[in-house]
Image (cartoon, rainbow, N blue to C red; front, side, top):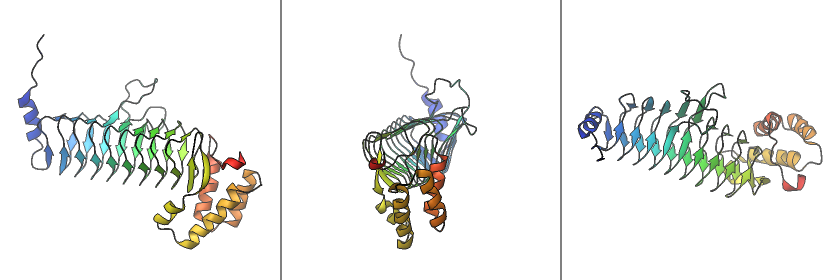
Length: 284
């Protein structure tokens, strides 16, 4: 049976409906139920489905698929062959109208895949913040929450329900187990795998991950002054290199480092952990 030729006139009408505030390649397919903001560019053969809302000044590469319900903010750069807002890869998913919400000024590289949420959480949403840099082949599973200024090396794999705090940095080929948390300004070396939480401000790596010290470069680049970093270093020794049981070490941080919000963040992070927290190899 001969293939039916595409309805070029229909494609042209969709394109023309956005002329004046967006630039859409004639081969792109835009559902009438999608909303495209001013200054947004959509490349060849890309598809924007119903219930997708793209803000202003976004760039979408070629052969990329955006499915809804999905909300994407302003100033994002989305590469080629990306898949954003696809149904979650979850055996219990039954076609529910869950969401993907992406903030502003993110870089989302080629072949990146970000799923919508599931009904297993109250918010039913996968959330990406602002100013993140997700390199090629990154996978962000359903119900994940990424903060701001996260850097993901090529082929980072985040399973479902992972929470990544602000300014975390991942090398390439990292795998994070579902329901894990990655703390603020943590640096995870390439090829690492973990099924436990990664504490804030630390450098970790390896199979199963271990802490190898503070991410001092990340702390300095974040704009923290020297006295604040000095207190973090002192708190690190009290927590990670103490001979005390961890609960006692946490109580010590609560009292002796009450002036350090970063030390208090460690206390909160450890106490809220459900999967356990990665520690220095010597303490295991």
